[in-house]
Image (cartoon, rainbow, N blue to C red):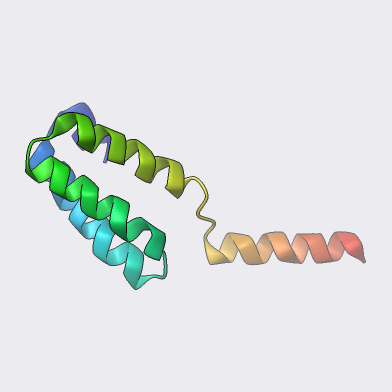
Length: 83
């Protein structure tokens, strides 16, 4: 996404937004569906400023996603430390 944004490649950014909209929900990250949908729509319609804002929102949300394997390792480490 960042690369497409840097190149101002709105069709590519729209495609990535579309992919994220579907795959985020598929794997249980439903909170990504609406912002990714807006990112896609803004990029497709050439609304660059709005697309940039939605890209920043999506990026801020992604920072809080912890893959299950990492989460399980963290929980195991916490449990071991408590014992």
